[in-house]
Length: 561
Ligand code: G16
Image 1 (cartoon, rainbow, N blue to C red):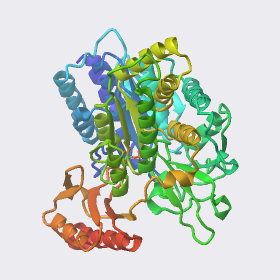
Image 2: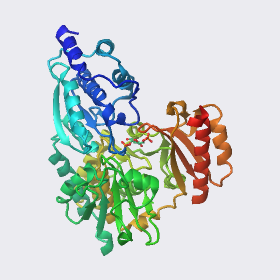
Image 3: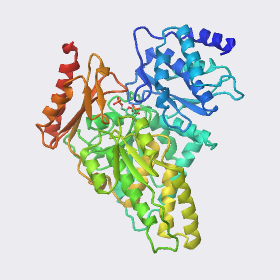
Image 4: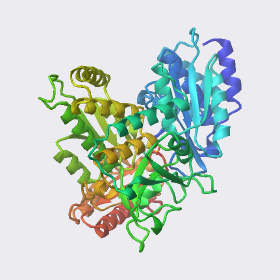
């Protein structure tokens, strides 16, 4: 490494000393902590982003400053790879080492070593390029500045600031830029609204929708998603969207609002009441990468009927399966094809058992991975059409390039035989879905438009959708422990292999409940152990979750040490 580069790194990193006594780790979704601890981490992730770009032939890399569903005083930072997906897991140990290097000299040493090991061309002809974005957290502005300083400590690297955007918008822009496609925020809105329009134009003439079902009320979590939805909705005809908790009325980000709150607590978010009974409602999370739907069933309680990520996955799977079977029907036209696209669905241990049964009854291949879209996305990409969703509402659909090429040519062939046939419409619908859905990462805004279009297509109310299957009652809890890394899991997080004895104790509790299932895992975004339980009744699920939480406390809690 040239001397000029070395002294630049030493002098600039000296302005960002790491916090004392804190060890950070690149978790489920990047680094997350109290915002006051993150200046040095974000600065160092700026360096990492520039190196990643140089390593990958100066492709555009994304750097997003967000802590998504966490409380407002937290913040975080994560990297998007050139595909728009999460940072390659292969680089995560380097990210950890960088964040925790105690001094500028240690940092420089690590970088020199890594650059050599990975063969990163520091003095190439092209500059590293990094797209930056942040959510609405007040700490975002100064952290973004730290990221810029990190980027500019690699000679020649260029930072392009996209301002306040949703996390999925930034991932979408990274993916689009690397494909050589226009990638501004306007382009994003244009692609979503035009593909949505296309799906609406292809709705079968017999589909009917009741008056009340036209309205959709969206909880924006007092974050960036509500703000962007207000812009997007102006471009959409035929959708009556009302946005609440858009952050304009002084509400606090994620406090009593948002997809994480709604999904975990199963109660109405702030700003919603019994006046919304019967109306289709949706909730975004703090950076709009998660989406859940709900309805308010009665005046007498604050409980909601939740439509979670599992049900969104099921809705998408039913629709896609239907289009594939129309497309492959013989006899409609002279055009037939032997190509059988592989459709797979991916879930995590949090998926409600009833959803997995339902999907298998549909004849679908269901696979499981650990929590975190980085794992689900990777599995889904092994299929021609991979649909993945976490129960918390984080998910999307990915299409293989070969399937999309086949679809394009099939559409062309079909249009030359009988234009406007049912088969051609099915091909056009699938093509529109591939453009509407954000194939880089889970995206609440694009997911919402796809749900809305499919409900119209089917002529389904939210109640009809809810009735696809009956969820098994479940409960989620979190437990503070001395050291969450003491829990180590296996088999897609369904088994705790450490600390010794805890899984046997969980099994013994679970066996007491009909249809009981429970697991624990360390959170990757908060300093807690998460507990999940499901059983045949709500009382049983609550009781099982409480018993398992007590076990966690006995084995790992503050009184155990
Ligand atoms: C992030 C990830 C999600 C994951 C969630 C779980 O969500 O992007 O894929 O499901 O964390 O977090 P934990 O490990 O704490 O249970 P988000 O919306 O906070 O970015």
